[in-house]
Length: 204
Image 1 (cartoon, rainbow, N blue to C red):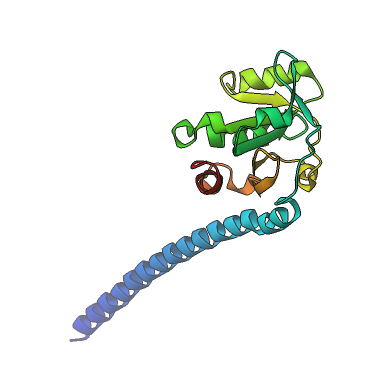
Image 2 (cartoon, rainbow, N blue to C red):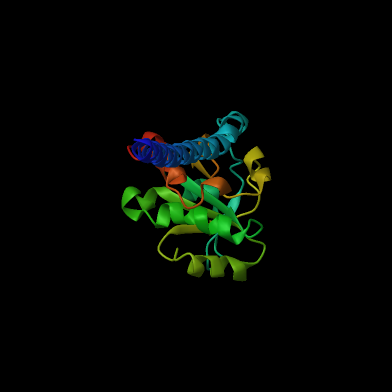
């Protein structure tokens, strides 16, 4: 009888240990999932949070119509002459980190079927015409509307980070969006730029 009780006690103890191990593993899994979700939400918040201020500071501003741009052949054009209707602008600079520029450009070039590139302008701010030409080759923008120009006189120019904006033929800024380093490697920035494009540019 004692042996039976001992065996039963051992079995009960073993079963309880197995259950505790299972419950602990399941709890760890749930905590990991929760941490992942919270991390994703924190990343999205850090990317979205500055957008409101950028919108308030820049939307509705009019870019000076005396600003000129240069093409890869160093031909000068008035900015107002290269903006046809409502355009999505990808603004980059050789003073931004290369990875940031590559990420911003790839939002468009990796999703070519999602955009009408006749309505897209790439505006670079390069001190050197040689670097400007290198950018065109490096990012495969030979067939795109790409120009080089200095400061546009907008508050968003001061963030020293690539950004997107929608402008119309009066050079009025309709919307702005700045990608975030925290969302690199996700489709978060693409979805926001595409939403801006679909709402303001696509049907123009």
